[in-house]
Image (spheres, helix red, strand yellow):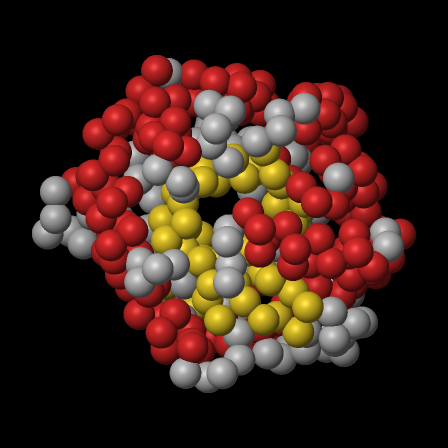
Length: 333
């Protein structure tokens, strides 16, 4: 996955379709490691370059763990790092990092309370919840998630107890998983109805590996599961991640130039509209997933595509999709 092909990305330039629409981007990362750098200054360059992005939500990506701390508390280093980045971004007077979603091991069960309290203390008032990526597939060719998930992890007593502890303490749970795992998520959501659960990246509709052999069957399975997920009132959905060619297999990374927004709309509008119509705009939020989605899209093209796909909805519904749902769910002030 190559995220830094800047010369290639520069081949696609678009002006904002709607530069005045208020946007809260509820899913981005920050890091500084061997694979590249994406820090507050890089984020601000994206969020202020075309569209009206007023605030963002950071989501964990194993940045700046405190390796000197006990294992369970090491992710608190990421919260401390992002809180400092948020303070730096605030001095710009432009886009704010308005919330932090960190990582804690849900398999700790009730013992995760200590870790959550530490995150809250390190977050400078911005800590809102946890993502424990459980993405795992029987096809070994499909990457396993970065939080070392095991099969059926979400069905264990320990994991469910950990997520229930999140809700009891007033925090949310972000789920990054693949679409064959959605039945596990449904069971989790029903087991912890008091915990706010946010499903990332459209519920992970895979289009690679064994799931590429019969895409229609894979998408039928995804749609059926997502309909059932929508029946869980404590679940909201992030509509995005659509630039992750390494999971969805659209082949954009191999083109001589990045796609334009019309190409993105043509590829994704049926699935995006299905999700919004199934969950409702007040339970959906558009996301960028940058810089991960930068492997195949520019930031302006991504938001232009989402704005074009949103035109079938009224102004109040678009307000929910672009900012209202994220503001409410992540308590972005």
